[in-house]
Image 1 (cartoon, rainbow, N blue to C red):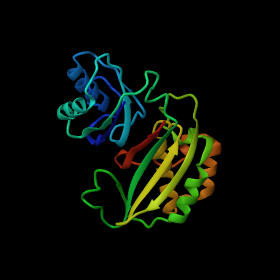
Image 2: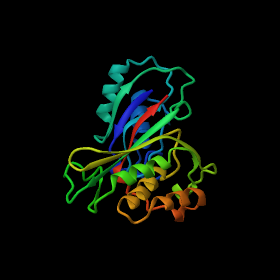
Image 3: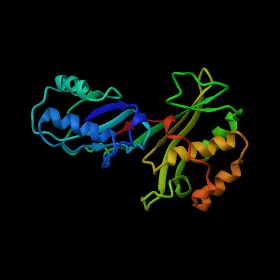
Amino acid sequence: MAVLEYDGTCYFGFQIQPGVKTIEGELVKAISTLLRENVEISYAGRTDAGVHATHQVINFKVDKDLNLYEFKWRLNSILPEDIVVKEISRVDSVFDARKSAKWREYSYLVVNGNYQSVFLKRYSILVVKDLDLRLMRKAAKMLVGEKDFKSFCSSESKDGNTVRKIRSFTVDKLKDNLLVFKVVANSFLQHMVRIMVGTILEIGIGKRDLTSLKTALNGKDRKLAGKTAPAKGLFLTNVVY
């Protein structure tokens, strides 16, 4: 098992796709090069194009007896600079990074002010209008629990079952006008976090009210929810097994 982080700015998402640069593609190429054999990996979250991770989990099977300390250093030396392996360890043969995961945590960064720090521009969005933090926290709480999130996923999503269980959803204000939306769920639908954040931001600026959120949940129609927030503010921040 390996825990990694990456800047997703220059990638077309995590999952391998023909003809484009992906996180999985770079990982498979690097691992296979070191092991001198073709390797397939399993991963905890299939992040979209432009989405980042501070705690993505992968696993792969290998017959060789590896020196993990040395292998991690060699792997990091050939991976692109925007991908790094933080930890690597042996796990039971039945472990699967995706299937064994109980909870996944995503965080979304928003700067609410009249300028955006140069060090946050790649990793957050700027909202100049005043945001009602109290209302946004109420909206986030309304999304907690086991619900049908059909209104909060991409219309192109191929997942037939749109019921998910959100364990917690918080909105915290940190220094320098930085807001952090943090949501924990058993799993997520395509664009689900970004659509939820986009909807809550519309509530925060007064564009919609809390009743519209309930209408969107009950209506099960993508058109009833808010805009999809940009990918650059989203991070996969934890996976619990």
